Image (cartoon, rainbow, N blue to C red; front, side, top):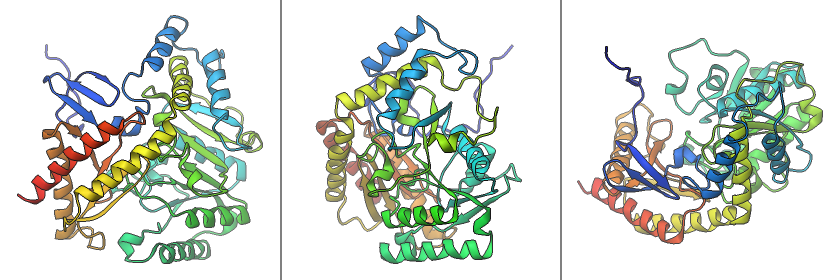
Length: 428
């Protein structure tokens, strides 16, 4: 009788099998020590196995592991809600918990439709919001996330992203173009009276690690308010200190969304997600529309409380800003003059190196070569004991996602290893 195996569709980005990990480092069963600039795709915010997070989870496991929170309430979830409130914008004071980013996105869509009584959700091109049916219906970061299991959810329209690099425009011109296209969408595809919400990441994740220009977010805020729709910000990857502010949207002065979606770094690796909104909006969800067996798990909630405490006590949001600036400077200096690189960008500890010509035809030979270069660099990093990931609609981007606890020395080490990997690939 043979044993089972993992699905053959699950392809690892690296060959590493973990033995143990701590902080920014993963120790493989091969005896090698890897500097982790993937952090579980931005999840292990306080690093691997932060002792305070471990202790909180261990203690909670001795009390109760699973307390289904629409049956009985538990103290960790009450504490997490209170603690999360310390970081939420004024007026956003009601929280619903789920397990994953995709679930939270779907909960936000459901809430938006119920709260407004309207059907249409507008999403922004190159956004990533998840793999479940509704979340994938909003996702345009690449066809691999939504192809093959249609039809997808109806009532979704997509508006262009102000992609200055790909459009060959200045940022101001790209923002002006994208906002005009949004207005045109409301004149040609759906009436403003049908618009329930705009869902957007303040910093694109899988779509390419691009900052959304503040003027564009402000333009969407003005339009959604004018049309009686909600602005929903997907902070799953950009939130919890990743960009050098606690929330990614805080780079846009004065911006207050209607709904915030969070997950990933909120509990340092334990599965928990949430949506937060003003109570007046959250109360418009229909009875029974919010729930779930594992949502707001007690151990995950305890880890979430510990995570927020660590982030505040250790100044990790500021560390993200400072270490991210150092890493960006190091990459730009070390990779200067490499013609195959079109852009080196980043805000906080959310950084990317893009290869090739972003204006090239997405299915053409130049785009294919750019994807090959990015993949080769990501694999070459493994030889340097550095773990990175690729992203972008055509796979032409290598992203670097250190833990918020990364040190100045680790930034230098990571920069040196990455530069060596890139130069080895481009000089082959």
